[in-house]
Image (cartoon, rainbow, N blue to C red; front, side):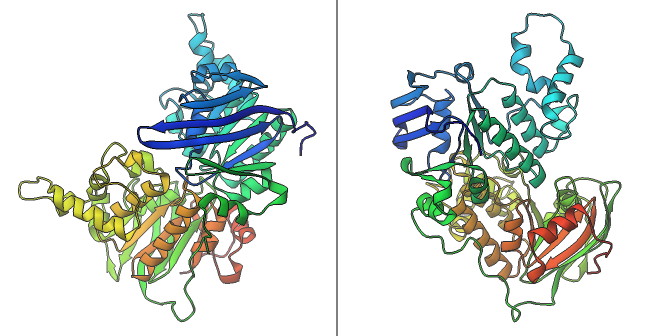
Length: 510
């Protein structure tokens, strides 16, 4: 990789502690980052990774412990101070201003400190374009709010690249990126490391860690567990250190030949919405999990949102259990038993500042209401507790805010909300984005259990190993059309990527 001497530590953390009331988030954590290395920080949600990095970035103040930068003890009191010290942080949660341009977001710090009464927007866009050219095809004059999540994430990364960083922290940077965009980012990371910039890479994806990182440090329950050289260990070793137990399999068993059914739950014919997708036809069989693959922008989410009548003017036929549906609004879709779980659980899927119970009941309040439309809090709590137990939800009480839960448990609340209406078909968009490996395995098991009870499951995912591991069939979307279907031994990353990028003249017949 790099020719930089990586034995030279630029950042050294010793015995760092942090508590939030009675909760000990960090318990004497040690961490060392060498110059010019890409160092992975791994651990389940709640392990302390974000707390540790928020302290390094000056967002939080530690209770005790020491941080040294270039051998000098430092007290980082704010993110602005961290930037002055050469520490840049790209957070997993996108924090851009949606109503201003990409260029203005990238250079917000510069524009805020400028003494000029007038802004040279063309110069700003030109400078932003030079940076964005390294990351992808993004218009610097576009309003951020008009961009898809993947491009917003690239804008966040572009902001960090404008800083004179010595230490760059990347928190799940590829969670919303396509495979091509991720490869571009990895190339940039290696170039930065070769120039002597040190990178802390937070990720749940073992493939990314083992392809790009030099070392990996594991935290568990707020404690330092181990640091390993990536070249001298295995993904299984890292996962065992993360969870403190053996995960037998990330994916549950698929349907056997004897279990496969010809019974069609959902049948879609000729689904079309202007210029976004056209003549989409497919069926979902009882007991199976169907996958939707394709490059971001291919139309996967748009097809599903159109089918559920969440957006767009859609034509075509949708038949559920042999009955043709007339869907005009999402409320019609819910009433029919077809629900959609958004890829953006924090923006569209959950009310973070509301309780677990309130979130679970949100799709159909009349189920937990008394006469006059008043919510029966006991009925609402009972519903949340019942579904929480079914999904193995970890929580203190159903009245606590969803924002207090780990990413994996937040996703379980979102799934519980779907289950509250007794759905016949659930579309799940990126169901394990941003959750740790243990939670992923649990969610995959939940999906298979639901499918075996007769609920129709359709999974949209940008992670090809997830689609291959959890789905019985995968449909590939390219430029708003179905490019093909893969099953069995033909369900490989190469085949899916070929169909997604090149396409296939054969039209899907079923």
